[in-house]
Image (cartoon, rainbow, N blue to C red):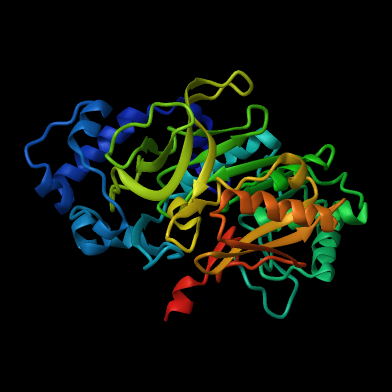
Length: 420
């Protein structure tokens, strides 16, 4: 009733989408009407996804930033499109043209995915990147959202979120993974009744083992973590039964490529997530390198949920930025700094901060069973993975630093500020 018959049709037929046909239709339109593709691939005929991958080179944000108009279709009515920007957390924001009716594709996909944890266009508490001034929350009646301030994390404000959710029987908490993790910890710490809560739906940040342990500790509450991005090319969901991320080819054409644009085919190998739109003919991004990475788990059918397609064991976010450096210029990725499961069980939050190469501060929010011996063991485990000359220290904190848009940061580098 709210989104109309096109949404309803897309919702019902989502899992049966012929992704290749949709991709080829967008490619045909791009070769005809979009200057960048029309000039670069003039005379090329694409009849399959294999043809597309063989003929088209990958692009990235810098390529699109270099000539915004060249990526814009000459055949569209611009009044039917919104000009949007990405968050710009990894540099200059990217300008995008997105169709105003994108909700038909976007919400049909999300609602079908969320239905796996019981969502039926139910009221949601949304805690992401909104700042709420002069009140505790606002209501979006069209999307049935109770929007809370994603930048307030005091005990009093968490209690207010809880009171509103319980009083109004709001069964779904949708937010950044770190915000949801903090709220789940609050419920456990207080021993509060959470029988009204059906599921946490989390997104936009890397998902870590210590966070999963907290969500798993709430009996009867499901959890779905999913990956998406502002360019709206790729969608993946975390399957709690298999421990894998499943990519939705019905949403966007997704590839996992190495630095030479070759398909990643070895289980456990890390590749960059590359996406192509299936519906945005106004500004089609095709074989677009997202800057996010994933660890390949193969292609096939999930024995637990039935998903058919490509999966990953983990999504690594801005892989290139999650590095900590030794004094000699060598580095270790934060993924390589993974802790043992028993250490994760004793901490409620973790963050790496580096002011200069050769020095690393590990911020920790203490969890159940955390003491000085756990702190020293954690320090020793991290130090053992760095060069012997690197100094590693551990600091207990009540909360972890976030970016300007409210997202959790596993790794914070202040090296550039020190150098300047």
